[in-house]
Image (cartoon, rainbow, N blue to C red):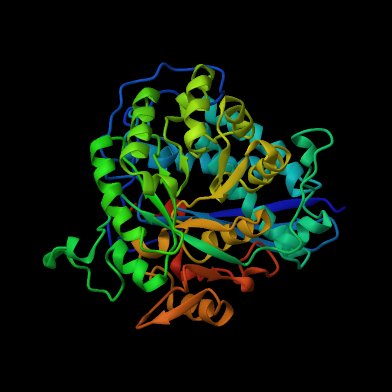
Amino acid sequence: MPRYTIQSVELLIRTTPPNRTAFHIGGVSGAQGSSIPQGSRVEPKPTDSSPAPAKRRPRGILYAQLQLTDDRGRSAWGIAADRPSFGWLDKRKQYSPDQKLSRLFQLVRAARDVYLADSFPSPFAHWQHCLPEIERIARRDDHESLSAAYASALLERAMIDAVCRLHNVPFFAAMQAGLLGFEASRVAPTAKLALPARPRTNFAIRHTVGLSDPLRDSDVAPGEQVRDGEPESLQGYIQRDGLRYFKVKIGGNAEEDLERLARIWELVARQDMPVITLDGNESYSDIDAFAKFLERLEREQLGLFQHIAFVEQPLTRQLTHDPRTRAAVTRLARRKALVIDEADGHVDAFAEAFEIGYRGVSHKNCKGVFKSLLNAVRVQQAADQGAFQTGEDLSNMPLVSLHQDFVALGLLDIEHCERNGHHYSLGLSHLTAGEQVRALESHGDLYERRGEEVFLKIRNGQVHCSSLQCPGLGVLFQPDREGLTPLEDWQVAW
């Protein structure tokens, strides 16, 4: 095997237009304490169902673009991108939104320096070497473990992309051939990762229903209509896209959530075999309050309850890992499987949560591709105990972050995935005209033109994306430089 060296890493920002509609999630206010390490526990706090702060992230997409060489003289570029969603990564109140954003960028810069420091025999080996140092820096500077995972994952994906491109193979083929050096033995000495026969290239879209989303067309007041030709309500999206899977945000106020869920069920129940997932975004810091909500939901809305596949991250990340909750979590999980998301901040987080009673873990590229692969190994080992992996979304935007997430999901063979970037934003309007043309030419299975804009193509609730099985991690061409600004020169847009 060759040795690789990352020669340079550019951090760039693409400013995005304002969202076409508001996106509000649940979330507990005042969560305390970094979750690095997971040794110290906090006492549960009273439930606070106040809405998420207005500033959860800036209007921008953060890119890491690197140049990589090997000791045989070959070179390749690699890229990764994510929204810098500091409000999801770190929900503590001691830092302002502006401080959180600045601190996140500082942590990403530190991660870049760590990834640049040494040559390496494989991407997996380098990830294993770099992550502990990034976590150490994060602990020193009072970051959440989730922020450390985010910073590492951005560089990790760009590195994977470059190595796959260097060998002129897609991610799936690179994993099959062992080119990335992935070692399932990180989970257990004899563990192996069973890959599907071929990568999945069609996915059911699990449509996000935010806390402020209009449910019916009649919910949108005439003076508040967007009038851009796209649906403006859940009803409109169901009718146009043929949706069957839905991810519904809950906010931690039982009365409000139950009333809203009843209205959602009136629409969703008309679909053929609908599937619903609930996402608490850490809305509950009192496990008894969440238990009462779940009991009421089953008692008062049995039809909807029977179609719920799982409940994602209902409790704060600190409470999720509190072993004192094991008995209560086990009882709750008999009603509905529970999934960790924000609590999945470090490599062994799912293993710890599984012992407490959680059976599911979300895949998000922003938490790390290799971490998701290790979790896939854990899921395969504990499948007879109900372990599973889900596909969730950090508002992945075309092209880079969306493509790379679909490619990772294809290897993980996850049937349905949350998607929301396509309906809170206006298609590919954040890209340059040239990028939109190339997206249509290269990925006609994934995108279509409607009017003057290019959009994700959803038919019968599904997308097809076999064109993403290209050399690299799903990205065929570099973004136009004219659409990007060096991070150090970027003026923050809110």
